[in-house]
Length: 235
Image 1 (cartoon, rainbow, N blue to C red):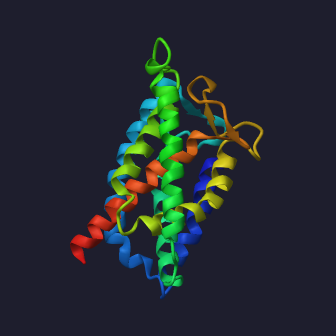
Image 2: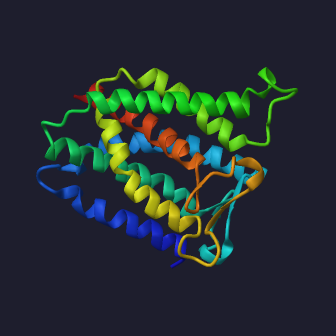
């Protein structure tokens, strides 16, 4: 198995095995989860494919099984199944095991941080025409990820589930830094997933581009939104 494949497998095996825990009974949510994963995952695969072709990022064949869908390795496609599955699993675990959780203050603070930081990124790197002679379109990743975070936050921060989403997102930063760190070269001689310095601002959290925080948020927030839409319709 490829190195990227092992990362995906090791990330998935725990949540999958614990999906049958009696208190969480996550398997009962699969009928809401998998349609949500398919819809959001398809959009992100198309985004991923476009940016791969633009050279915003790419994949080191040394660590791949060399099976591709378009320009994406099969491991990258599976990433958009495993990460969403794991996130909603963690969200449901939090809801099941911490029924007296309080998230109002955390939710408000988080909303302001995401809103302000994404707005700054959009204005500085995508709204350059307001201050300079032209928009800096080299930063495709920075602009798109930050703009999407801004829009998604605006439309969801008043949702009843948003507080639980925030808590789950913050908890998931731990596996996020582990998995993304491995993928971007923290323990390998070369990164499994590489990024063009031309298209990112250059801030790194260890080996992880700063924009990945927005990208991860952009993946998980609409996923959660759709999950609750489907669950409410059948509830």
